[in-house]
Length: 393
Image (cartoon, rainbow, N blue to C red):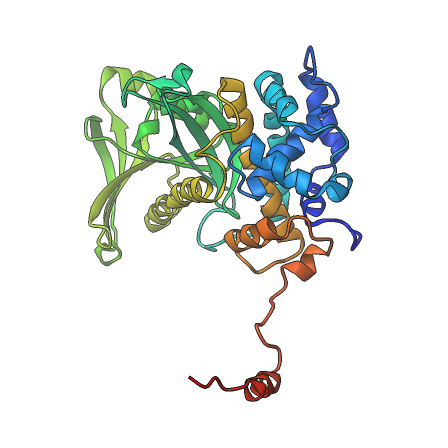
């Protein structure tokens, strides 16, 4: 990476332009905006995410203030508010979805060696969903009957290796969580950790047949019969470790094999967890700790809503909203890839804050994000303080 490259172009370089061109070729636009390519639209979306711009007018204003650097940022077309608005409304959002798939795979390869807890499995995913609130006056097409507001739902499968999204989907707000199990990739030997909203024995049995393992929180209305019990250390919070079989007619047909039932009391949060899994070999405490790590996906949703543009949108159509959401995921993955490649010790939040005010700087990211002490020499600080003239009041 050349030292003269802008900070923005160094971050965008995590996705090759040729890769994005292949994504755009899959979903061509019938009448593209004059002078604005799909890649220029993608750059504008990522620029808005990294600099926390709230509207297309803000993006155009900031880019117009640095016209001499537009080419160095990677833009080649004519960036206007009208062009961007037209592209956001008409260009298929699946172009940005395809770009996110490439970045997910790239980030997964980089972080595959990271393991926060050596006692946990090497490949584990936390599956959950979150509501993205919208204004009913501006987005009437996204009406959510349960809350009588407008909303969309973001489904996410978070890899616990690096806390990175490995799969995501955007649906209507009333889309049932359990139906997502029909869409997620089933990887043999991987663990899928889920809350009780995903408890559907027919779909869980499909994961089991694919060679995957699941850990899901049980519901009270599930009928079962205890086949055998194993001793547990109650000092660790475990209460029971049982092998069970389902007894209701529908559940027996849906999941005809045995399940493992683990009860764990979390004294810190004062909750009692009843977990079901199809893995019988690992210790019961490992299963409980694995479910405890499911909280990482909740923290991810909180993080992206606080630090990326998912509260105000650049367009009012369904296509514009989906394009912006996928662009936000792409921006998150790009920063995470840069952090891993350059071995930066700062958190993603710190990197975003620094990048947002240095986006036009022409200096290496390693230098920009390196630890910078406020004063490198204490003696120099003492000399400066001695040279200050006293103020006579």
